[in-house]
Image 1 (cartoon, rainbow, N blue to C red):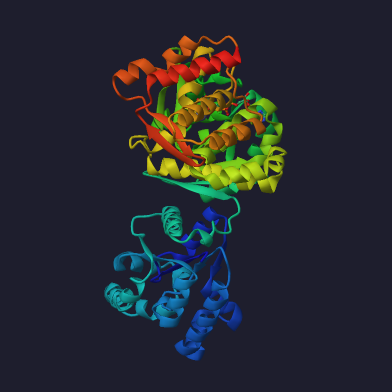
Image 2 (cartoon, rainbow, N blue to C red):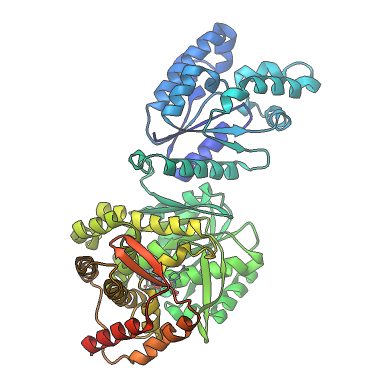
Length: 556
Ligand SMILES: NC(=O)c1ccc[n+]([C@@H]2O[C@H](COP(=O)([O-])OP(=O)(O)OC[C@H]3O[C@@H](n4cnc5c(N)ncnc54)[C@H](O)[C@@H]3O)[C@@H](O)[C@H]2O)c1
Ligand SMILES: [Zn+2]
């Protein structure tokens, strides 16, 4: 059940939209009319004229069977094929069938003068009195309407560009595929980890080894073709900017590069101001786009600049740190820090696509890599026991960055984040809360240590250990469950122990355990089991104090 099949009347854009959808998915594109032409050795028009419609239909039937034998292809079919019972049944059994729809007037406008779009069978309709064309199209379309209605999804293309229609088709495939049994699999685009759905459209997340070279093509496929403003930091840029730039230029995209100093300090309004000035000087405008090449710092800063410059430029995330690949680049949150606090000024701005090249992880410092595992493992711990098992069983290969094991685990981890943010685009529904597992104490520890001693992932690992303990003490998580989590974190080089000499009271006050509990609103993400997070408001403040003091004691 892995093909995406397009049906619909001539002039609804099946070939053009099919090709664009195939590019978005990274799949093969097949046009059954082209297969017919190859087989017959003559044009569809000649087949109709010389051999008649019956011969055409039988050639078409064979071509459809040949195309449907594929797995993971986008298949455009002739406008009449889906009206044939046997073809239709086979198509519905072989994948997701999406019908492209358009108003008769629009169809006539598209067909008239656009000979490439004309199918032989409708050409006679367009001959004769132009005033009656629309009527004739409407009539033939009406005959087929009952058949078209049997498609699993319909995309109305009247007001959509080819690229927009293709995104809708991919969205249909994604939604319908989720309803299909898990055995239907993720399709053949090995690199597509997930798709984020939001009011801004769909955002594909590509994740795989050596993908950076395809950056230009993938931007083009997403409709980004003009000038790219590539933001990176001094460290990442030195390793990877040249390749990113070349990949964009090969695709005919003009590239300008801006490098900020590596480190959290670059996430400031001052730095954003310098970025704006640079964009203004280069006369950046709406049709242009921003590329963020780097970790979460570059992603947040460049994303914020893209969200706000000229009231919003499209942007592309090319995360190069593990934390950014599975977490920061997904979900559309962008921000800069103020002296008063982290991420205080920001905007939601969904990237048009995320492209994570796992090969770039080979230059990431070991401690940053370990820190990144915390978020990757967290996704399994909160929602996917199977992913935890994969991280356990393939631990050695994954940590050695062996491409197959690494990409399969990280794709699943990234897909969990994509799925959650798709359900709660603006973080208003509480669905994203589970992502905060380990973060209540993790953030407090980072704040209490002045963001100097611990990397974010390290603090989160300690926070997950503490949240696990609280889960255990509340009778939610078994002793074995807690031990299993902790073994996994340690195996990936993460700390569980409280850093020595940290002021426990400062940590407790940063969790706002007293203040928020007074309002009855401190939400703790806890585990009921591995892969099963719950959000609880009833954690006794005394229990939190007790666990924090115990941990601080063992750490000291
Ligand atoms: N927007 C979100 O939803 C979200 C979510 C989580 C975190 N964040 C933000 O992300 C930031 C942290 O992200 P991060 O951990 O990626 O930090 P980072 O961007 O500072 O990267 C960590 C360090 O690794 C370097 N680096 C990154 N990739 C490299 C590579 N491939 N080779 C060599 N060096 C490389 C960077 O230059 C930096 O020195 C924080 O500012 C945090 O607030 C945002
Ligand atoms: Zn985090």
